[in-house]
Image (tube, rainbow, N blue to C red):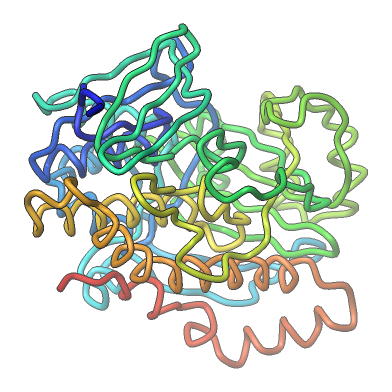
Length: 401
C-alpha cells in the first residue's frame, strides 16, 4: 500500500533552525509544513552574534534589509581582563569584516531574528505553520515518512527535518543515543536599556571579559538601543533542566564571579533582571550519520549542539538550512529518493559543524583559565592581536558552489 503524501517536507520545531529550514525548502520549490509545540511562535532569550558567514545566508535569502532594521553592527570585538579591566586584544569588525568576508558582523536580539525568519517563511505560499503541535515520533518507509503529533493526528511527507533542538524527539529513534549531559557551566543573561545608562557606559562594540572559571560578553542589540549581557560561570543548577529560563539570584552570580573590574561591575549593576540556565551538550559529532539518513535529516542543535564560546550556534543552523535548500533546488525530484541528496549534504556539513563544536569547547577552556595559565593567554593576545582573534576559516568558509 502506498502512503498518501500530505506535504513534501515536514519540519519539527519552530525555532531559528526550523524556520530557516522551512524557508530554504520553500525557496527550493517544495511544499512545507512546520510543527511547533507552542500555540504562538515566539523566541525566548536575549542576544545572538551573527558572524559574516551567518549574515551571508540571510543576504542570500534577501533578508539583509530586514536584518538592518533590527540589528546592531559593532565596530570591534574587544577582549578585557575581568578582574583588572585591562584590554587584552581587539579585532576590528565593521568595514574590515565587510571588506574581508563580504558581509558585516551583526548582533541581534534572538526574538528579532526569530520574527524576521517567521515573516519570511510565512510569506512563502508553500509554507504552512502548524502551531500547538509537537512531533512525538515518526516512521519512515521507502516512499514516505509519517509523523505522530501531540494532538493525536498523523501526517506524512517525503522528507522530515528534525529542527527540534537539544532535546530532539526526532533524533533519538534515528541515532539511538543518550540524552544530553550537563557541562558544569551556567549562563546568566540580562538585557539593559542603554538610554538609561550614562554616556560613558553605553556600548557599541562586542566586549568579552575573561576571568578565572568565568567570562562575560556584552554587546548591543535592537539597533544598539539595548545591551545584551551574558555571564557564564561554573556550577550546577537544580530544577527543570529542559527549561532554560530560570529566575536568577544575583548574589549567586556575584559569588561565582568573584571580584571584577569597575567597568564590568557597572554593567552588571545596570541589569534589571537576570535569567539563568544550565548548559548541556552531546558528544562531538564524528561523521555524516549525525545529520540523519534516509528520509530524516537533523539540523542545528538537534544534530550538533554548540557550546556558546564561538557564538556560532544560530549561524550553523542557518548554514545547515541554506546548504540543504541549495542542494534540493539543484536536484528537482530528489525527494522521490532523498537518500543521495541527504548523504551529499551530510558529507558537506558534518566536518564544518564538528570543527566549530571542537573550537567552541576549546575557547571555553581558554576563556576560563586560572593563573598562571591565564597570564600566557593574555600575553599571546597582546602579541598576536587580530591574528589570534580572527577566524577566516569560519567567517569565510561557507561553500557556494
